[in-house]
Image (cartoon, rainbow, N blue to C red; front, side):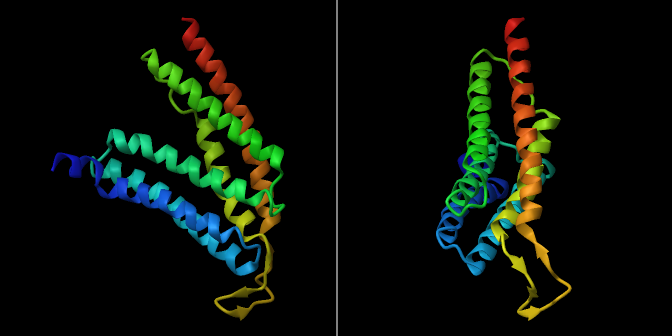
Length: 195
């Protein structure tokens, strides 16, 4: 019963659902067409919504668990990285920029592990949270990619948006914040360790 209560609560199940959505996202992005791009964006959007929802429910219902603390950021990173990596061969994001984002995540995770082994907790910064917000805002536009003249099966000449351009703008803002927050985290780490 204790295992069920601490692991199999609704917030953790939502997080697990986000991880299960990753293969669906990957398969959809194997096909470079408007329909698959639309559904990939929908899957990613749902995953991003559950990221907010599971955290909200966990705090509201007092169901914050160690498992949730581990799984939630892992699920976020996996969903974002899967989407970005799958968009490289589609030509929607530059490979070098995705490398920078992945390198920052690996560096911060490594430094966080070292700090944790020393009993030190380095809190997530506002910069890191802003980076995540801009990443989550950029990816749906990049996934949609195409010009859309339709909505609910109807042509709407007024509903015209190049979602890729919107997505790439937010992507470069996220990239800037990724670098800035990575340098900021490294500085905090070495300041704390030097004490």
